[in-house]
Length: 268
Ligand code: MF3
Ligand code: CO
Ligand code: CO
Picture 1 (tube, rainbow, N blue to C red):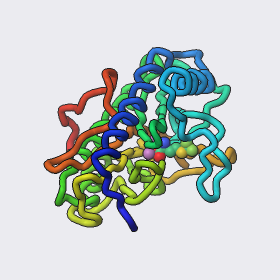
Picture 2: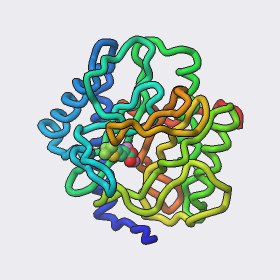
Picture 3: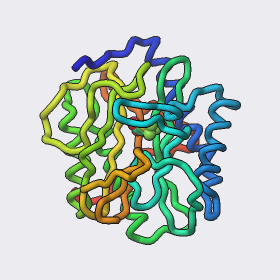
Picture 4: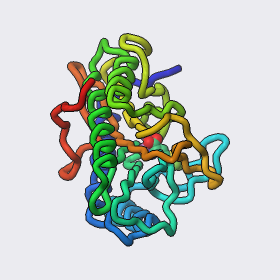
């Protein structure tokens, strides 16, 4: 495993890419309403990235080993869909929850971030799942500092999620990111405190926990990309791209509309 320590010049480009990715989510927010199709959201984001930002949507035609090329510019994962949902003709309806995952390439560097959105009024259970998952991501981020270990991040996320009766998806993880979309290290969203790779200033990786209201097991849809819960339960995910600094962390995927770090309030 080679974990790339970014140079100051690379870090500056990653700051720009991160902010731009987050600004795509700011831009799309008012369009996430009942009646819109996920494909319409994809086209809006695609055009904003390409025409306004002059960035490249990294998912479009992305084809890691064993996968067909991803056919769209963003991922849209609704309700029991965990991640990698392909935008299509599905119309959002009142009460749905949806994850929109945006990755842009700017000056050759990637910014990767996702948020949960409510379509109209969510159920109490759906809102709680999204809020717990948001806090779980931030509890992971809060463990980032030189000398800490990747296991501290995973442990903090797992402890919160399982402590309130949810489960952590195991098959997908956060990842190093830079000139490549996915690079070392793998950032598991579960684990043991003090275990795993020691963090060093200049590392950049994502934290993107997928939390299921029911069991952790997943199912692959025949479209080759979409992942759903096996038991049909709701799933939520949030993602930030984060830099390890000399004395802690800097979240790179921030923008005017990005929700701030929360006051921690769930049991753990
Ligand atoms: N953005 C996703 C991540 O957080 C990856 C999506 S790959 C795609 O790592 F091909 F589905 F877009
Ligand atoms: Co990612
Ligand atoms: Co992502």
